[in-house]
Image (tube, rainbow, N blue to C red; front, side, top):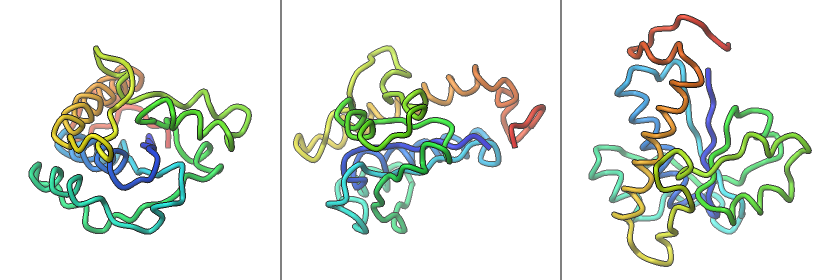
Amino acid sequence: MIRILFVCHGNICRSPMAEYIFNDIVRREGLEREVEALSAGTSAEELGRPVYPPAKSYLRRLGIDPSGKRARVMERGDFERFDLIVAMERYNVRNMARFCPPVGMDKVRLLRDFTDSPGDIDDPWYSGDFEGVGRQIEEGCAGLLEYLKHEYPYLRGGQGSRKHSRE
């Protein structure tokens, strides 16, 4: 199982959107037994809170229900538990570096680095543009899955076909 952790500041907007959008794409590809994503924040200020209402509305328009999601804070052990840690912006990467084990940062990437427009995912908490941010996240998640298919050729078969496993 390939495990991905999406990370933003508070874990109520961008990273849960990425978690749910990516898992939906993975499910539609039939790869839910091969790839799993969760999300966390680098700050405890939103700990335990549900997905922010405009982010939840965006996901629901995609047919995704994030009702059970509660914000959690990233832990040092996440660098061991996850194969890839995908940050929404450079600020998140700087925050992670404060508690990362020495070899953990080699697992960290920015979500938009998997697109033709590398850089940060905008923060809709400040801009209010959940539609634009949702499109950035969808594009990044699609690119991330293509990257994983390239890195792990057994994923290319889709529909849960497993030729080789890392389990």
